[in-house]
Image (cartoon, rainbow, N blue to C red; front, side):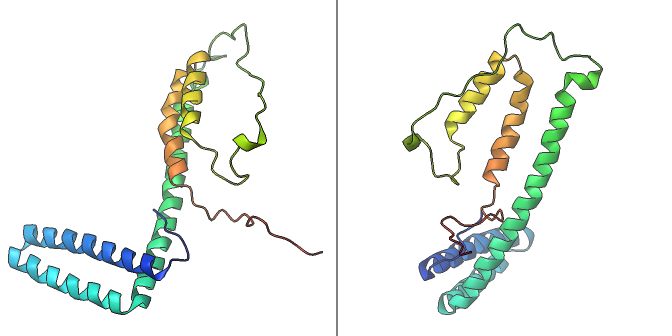
Length: 181
């Protein structure tokens, strides 16, 4: 999960406290399992001191925040690449053409193509907004049933994961950017 790039002081301190508590509990639990409850208690005390340091020195929290965003971006990029590869594998494995068939199935008498019905301008989101709303899933499932392409439902979890891992830093220009020539 990528966090906003320019946090306020309250965001930084909230991030620091949350990360500190979660890591402290995890390390204390593992220490209690591996060593002893006494080691777990001493690690909790050390985590409290580290937490206090972060509250007194917000620049330490800012470094941790930037580090988290850097790791989240790298993870998202790697996970997206893996998901795209797996979805292509599913796509090519499910294709009847792979099994040597000339055509996947006899061509239907009618086409699955539908003309786009125009909507008013107020029904659309911002031009650069995320058009993925839950309604597209229902339309996709409906299309796969109507066109007898039920195998395409295997791709749906991958597409949803790709949407969840999408980073906003796509290299595009910001909105309302004016250029003087």
